[in-house]
Length: 497
Image (cartoon, rainbow, N blue to C red; front, side):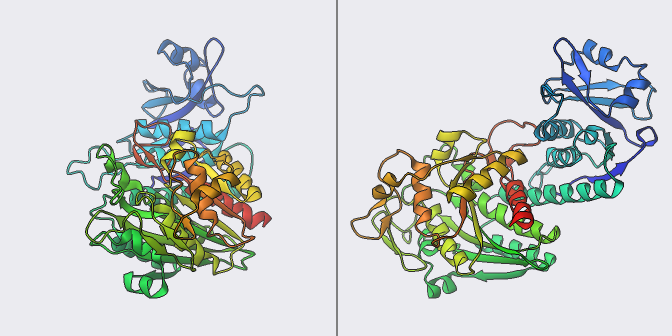
């Protein structure tokens, strides 16, 4: 899917929109209007808040109330969306605007053109929220129904220049488009998205963006010794791949390696998963989708960086050729791993890719994956766990929170390392107990990170795939988390090193 067509406008009364979107606040006793609604309120003789209150509007977050204009405005409908309560100082958070814009976009299905005044509060957040809230994936439906909103005009903020506003619109649109790339990949079913087809799609996207592209097939992986990727992918009739996509920006100040887990379907292998909800494992390549989308975005926004995405791709299935509990795998780079559980497969393909990524001598390494169910147990379905070297981990977590995607810094307790000791190999792929599973996975990955390399692992097992109802700018299915976080981290590295 592509995002709606976006434009800026200075004059809301001259707009061709069918619907005007305004924001509302939850007050102590009644609903109040957010900035940007002044012209609409004037058309209702200054009584718009009163009218909305009579319709039950409270201004609570993501509340949507529609009001016919009855000829008072060129648009036929006013859509009032709740922003919740402003801060004590009257401020409004970007995530409040983003979620309100997403809720409004979801309510505008089938609308040809709308005008949003939420942009006067936060233009970047309004654009992102609108684009992502409008997202639908209907490729496999014979009757897709009403399409998403076709076009949105954003009322220009009063502060700032027209040039700055255009730059903000361009950047926010590009970021949203990158999230959509990831969502489309995640939502594609595994019978159509498998290692070879993912690699083919990645190659097409890389070529269109003018990026360097390399793919290693199963023969090349065997020749070069990628034992983790080969072991995990050995049970499928559709063999594994390693994809590498590189962007070389103008006068790059830093080199950043991105690694994303690409298990295109995860049955658990011989350590097979329960049947219930196994269909959700179509999303086990969300990390791969995110880093591919991120390197494409870096190119589109021309970050002054060198960014390389290493994407290990495999399908984890049980068969006569599957790897087994008890096997010892010779990993890329020389370490050996005893397999105690074939459902702890993500860390095996990632380990190979991490070692390969470090050979390029990057300044930073960012890895993301739907790695552990323990992440969901610890932090729920919307908060990623972020591990790694302390300083960079905390930097990434702070940026993740600022983007609205969220993330929480987690420790790597040294006492858990001994639990990964193996009687046969350098280490085992699981501890043999359930305690601190997310942290143990992070410790496993740390064994393959080059000494002194600042790195962060983002566990998105819950946030990558929404199995519940829509909320804010997030629909059901693939979310595209953490593309916006990675984009913001890259921008921060480009600015501050």
